Amino acid sequence: MGNTVTEKILAKAAGKKNVEVGEIIEAEIDLVMGTDVMMPLSFEIMEEIGAKRVFDREKVVVVLDHFAPAPNIKSASQARDIRENCKKFGIDHMIEVGRGGVCHTIIPDMGFAAPGEVIVGSDSHTTTYGALGAFSTGLGSTDIAVALTLGKLWFRVPPTIKVNFTGELPELIMGKDLILRLLGQIGADGARYKTLEFSGEIISRLEMDDRFTICNMGVEGGAKNAIIEPDDKTLGYLERVCKKPYDIIRSDADAAYENIIEIDCTGMEPQVACPHSPDNVSPVSEVKGIKVNQVYIGSCTNGRISDLRTAARFLKGRTVHPDVRLIVTPASQEVYLQAVREGLAEIFVEAGAAFNTPSCGACFGGHFGVIAGGEVCLSTTNRNFRGRMGSNEGMVYLASPAVAAATALSGRISDPREV
Amino acid sequence: MVLTGKVFKFGDNIDTDVIIPARYLVTTDPAALAEHCMEDVSATFAKEVRKGDIIVGGSNFGCGSSREQAVLAIMGCGVKVVLAESFARIFYRNCINRGLYALEVSKATLDRIFQGDAISVDLEKGEIIKEGSSEFFNFKPISDEMKRIVAAGGIIPYTRQRIAKEV
Ligand code: SF4
Image 1 (cartoon, rainbow over the protein chains, first blue to last red):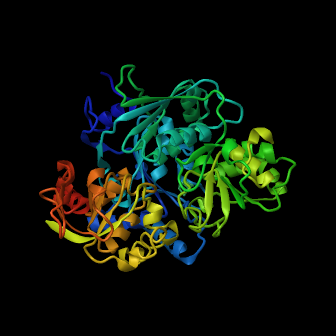
Image 2 (image 1 turned 90 degrees about the vertical axis):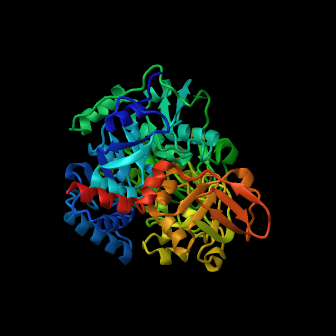
Image 3 (image 1 turned 135 degrees about the vertical axis):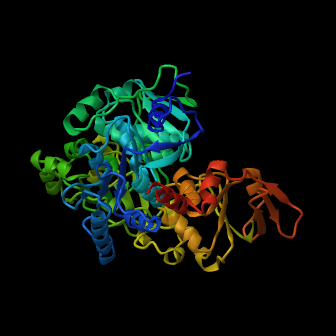
């Protein structure tokens, strides 16, 4: 029996020929990513461990993104301490407010992540970088502190579920719809502890932005990591952004999968996750008409340039419904600048949207668009747990930027194909 | 070691935003986090929970974000053990690394344990005994690999020992 791409990456990182599912290995880490909400605890733990410096200054990136720019004194103090601690522990790559953006967008875009690597981040959506063909997973502050100190960490080799997206991708169906459709099918724990390997003719036709969206939300099915084997599109993207050498690792033809799920995309409708879980998914036709108070377009899931372009196509020359506020938050400085240059920023502002500086912002109920009790928000983010975007009496629906833009115009959840 | 306490029972998919909502993530102090633990699903839990009490969840306990504050919030309540049918991966890992026992127990067993029950959990024997009744249940003890870290007193002392060896 052959091995999956995930097994091969972990075996290589453990210095072994082969690994088996369920085996505990110690892997060398290629990149450790930390964010502003989790690093304070990791630094405390590094002190407790007695660590003096990070294991390798080239292999560590800290991003100020959640409370960026700081909305209150507490978060400002946290950020101040992080800046000091980065100097103290020898972390050179501290991505400052105004120079980066949301971690999961900039880590690949700034060339920090590469295929074949083992990457850990202090954020559950670190699964995003699997879109490059890396093993990438989120961990708690303690594991991150240990990874920062030793550059090694224990892992249990996960079984892999392969997901094949087949058929014809209908107009206006985005990566977001594909992953929501899968989550609706397998549930919030359908891939718990496991690898989701995305494959099939549809995946190979998708651009990187959509692939990042899909891997980003793999964790909403409980997955340890999500991964897409590198192909020409991956290499084209890396050519532009990544300067470091890397290995292209792919699954063997006879790799053993725990399960293979086939999803035929032909005739698929836009998908919407209803409150209060990303796996509570319905086709848009079943939920359209629900009144919303806020529409949010942004986050590491759907705050990339193609997402903003899609939204702008609908908003151009139109205005947001009077009872709705639309908040658009590009996920990075690069996306922001591109949106300005392409005239997308103008389209949003003229439509009556709030166009924000890159930040996690409203996605996790931090700032820049927190919702009140009784309010309904349709959001392009990845998680709609109770209280996630503010009041625990609020309701959050998740959908693609196309659905979001159509909804902002009509004030009710809408099918973008009917606008 | 035998842990005895009163059961606080929760359902399936108790996520980290429920355990400790994001709006309270401005501190890492377990006692401060504990004040808001579970408040979005139970208005009374944080007030009524006592040292040594036991949380019982359903499947996929701790799903959601990687925030370790969720484990700290539970520990801040004085809870030492969480029983669930299954745990979300990161949460499980955080529990082991921090020294909170996260024990996987079958659904059949969980169905026989109710809110307010007093139970004893024998970690070595892998036994749960319901006080004042003859009912007892078995569970899978934590794995050997985990034990090594727990035996060192958690991942922190474990790592400390390792860097001490390297220098
Ligand atoms: S945008 Fe949202 S999901 Fe992404 S890292 Fe920020 S808070 Fe997390």
